[in-house]
Length: 341
Image 1 (cartoon, rainbow, N blue to C red):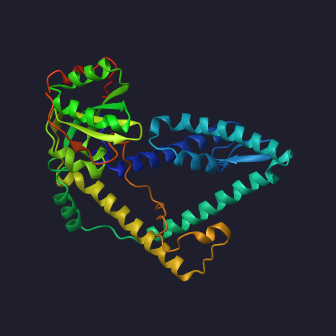
Image 2: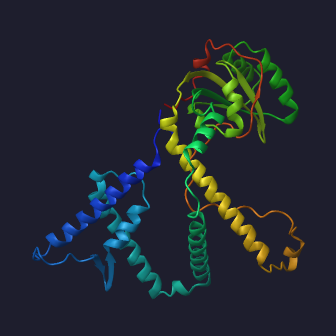
């Protein structure tokens, strides 16, 4: 199972990315100086290719490479060549579009202006966020102690999920049948017998891959216990088919905790700054927008720095635990269930 950022601190991946970019730069430079029989003491050209009269530079290639994560150093040369070919195709399309004056199309002009505004706004938010200070060791320790389910008592869960199509009036009956079932297989048999449509899935999720709102509940659940949650199309049923303890000590937990707390500080700085800007600005809503409730808080802008990535959760709201189901036979719930390893 691929463990999330708690086990793979991001600084290491950034180091590999920077190293890959540096190698790519060197490879492209060697290709340029090696072709055409130029003298070794002649400075390497920054031009990677010419498309008609327009140049594509190494800086453009490096910029694209920097947007891609996880490129190993051994693949840098190949990645550089692939990026160059894409940039050549892009340049050809741009030139043709300009010939046809598509760059003056109102829709294109609007998109360009929107992208420009977004880039400038993000640059400002990033500058504000960069004012956040790194959390101290005492803050890291406090967060570590306050979240045992994430660290000292961390578990890896084998979860089985059933998405059942049902009407709201059927949920009470489903809940009772789930409580009465001695195993997941028995409940699945009930669904099949009554022609109730459902889809099954199985996945392995570490504690940090579950929503924080649900984690405390899952941490208290024993193997074989089930949860039922209403959904717009019926119900979602989660069974803890099994779990294993996999704690993380403070040393390993420190880098991701520091990053999380730092991103939270950046988010707070940006949120406070936007509130101050709104308070100082003269904002007048016109037409239909004049009816907007000005007192309602505006959504906080997303911080420019990327937060710790979270895999898509299986449960999106705190579950309600129902009676335990027997763990026996849980692993063979249905032939349609697929495991994620």
